[in-house]
Image (cartoon, rainbow, N blue to C red; front, side):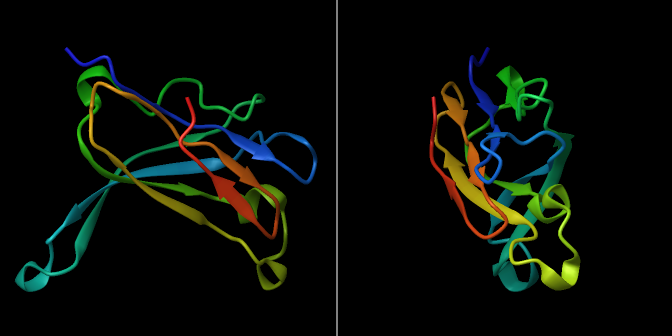
Length: 123
């Protein structure tokens, strides 16, 4: 049985607090899919929304659901900031990363403003 887990949180750097209500989508990315074995395929795994602490209520992946591979989180920050589509700079922020060890803990936070973002592998 795997002890691994994937988690995330979002911090609103403009307001200086956790970002509640951000929709996050999780995809598994498979290389070599598509026509003639080129390209890639993104398989939707789940969608969640951050809570008042800017975190998800449970890990995105845990235990047996964890696996090695390439994943992508898509953070819907444009909707969170409530900026009209015609005025937006950031809309959806994709963060693609690799999980080489399904027994590890992978934490992928997003620090964001309407104009910039940063991410890293947290603990």
